[in-house]
Image 1 (tube, rainbow, N blue to C red):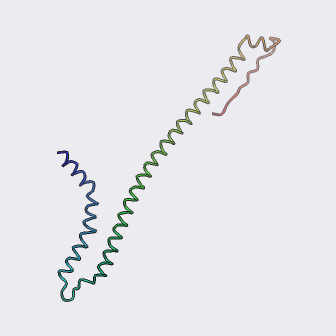
Image 2: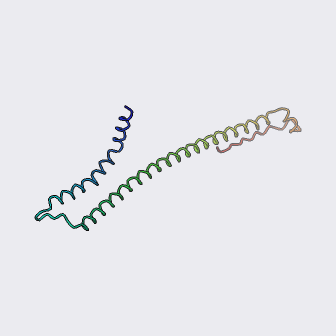
Image 3: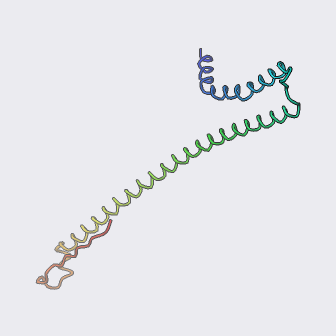
Length: 145
């Protein structure tokens, strides 16, 4: 049962390649055989060097097309993988940037609160100020986040 499922999946996956092999190899071979059989009268089967040139050009171009197909398929898969890895890296950088912005905002608020506590702390004010008649000066510090 498992073998037939695997074979059917293999056939479905490689059907186009199988049909291409049949088309590119067996059709010209059948053409050559039929020309040899029906070579009488005005139909000639051609010379050996002519057929050798035909098969050399035909099979060479078929191999070149096959190589180009598999090379393009490989490059597309590599490109998809690289795009995915780059997207993950960009997502990580965006997350880190957001985290950094949030932490900078949090730290600036903590700094502002520390300054406010120091200003309104009565013990600090008595030590820093000689007279209690001096008004408190509150500085507003804003940070770009």
